[in-house]
Image (cartoon, rainbow, N blue to C red; front, side):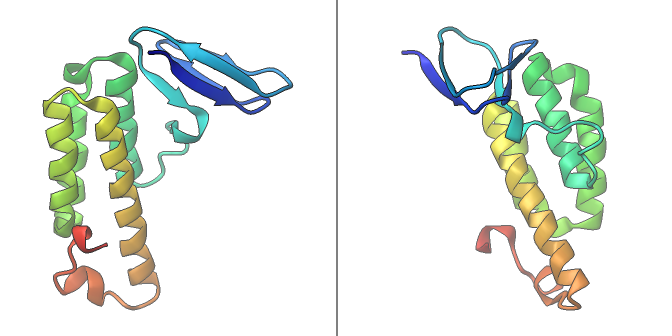
Length: 144
């Protein structure tokens, strides 16, 4: 069964090692076969990966697009260890990412990494609002 992708005018998508840019009108494409695929809205760059969780996501993204876990493994674990030192309450989320990577489910690992980004944003909101009680009083990421 083909994967159906609908693209807005000008939208970009990565399929394998190629960036495809849609023209001036909506388009529907069908993809048969196996290749890493990412929509523009899900892609981070080194410029947009401007937080620790986003850098972890970018590292997983590079694993996924390059289909090469080993090449980025050392950097990934360095980033994860730094993140967990600062936010040990994120261990459950990091474990979920790790499990997906270990089973070579890199697209699913990206989804888990998005959850880590949301959690990081929540922690920062709590700190900025002066209400750090959630992050410091046993709030767990799975509690939402």
